[in-house]
Length: 138
Ligand code: UDP
Image 1 (tube, rainbow, N blue to C red):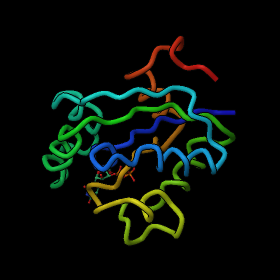
Image 2 (cartoon, rainbow, N blue to C red):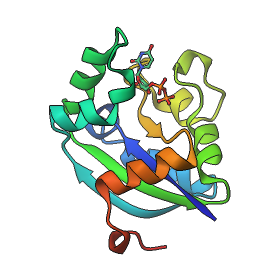
Image 3 (cartoon, rainbow, N blue to C red):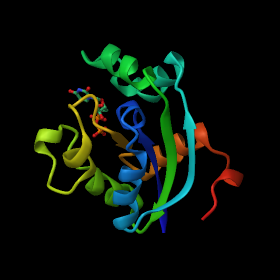
Image 4 (cartoon, rainbow, N blue to C red):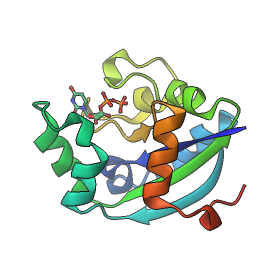
């Protein structure tokens, strides 16, 4: 068993489809072991996506991530990081496989409905930004 960190992005909360996304996550065998709704500040969004700060889309990404609340989650399962990346599909929804979260729900490459960590190391760092161990109930 391992863990990954997930964000249901503002385009998901705005359209009231967080339950529909969670249904896809759970159907794939991942367990939501922690979850809360938060509204990212600009500083939080800039920190979270700091690795992209030189990219041309950074300003728009920060704007989108702070436009409405998000749902931050810890997911648990076998190979959770890789499994959830598979469930999400490609960053660009036009390239995402059938049945994936982004194919089903994403509006654009920026408003692509959900985030999933890209490594076990980053999952641990991202989880620790939002949850204490006591809040994660497996
Ligand atoms: N993004 C964007 N334009 C791009 C690439 C990425 O707006 O050309 C946004 C998109 O919301 C994406 C996030 O930046 O989910 C982080 O990009 P990354 O390459 O890490 O993709 P992910 O790991 O989310 O699939």
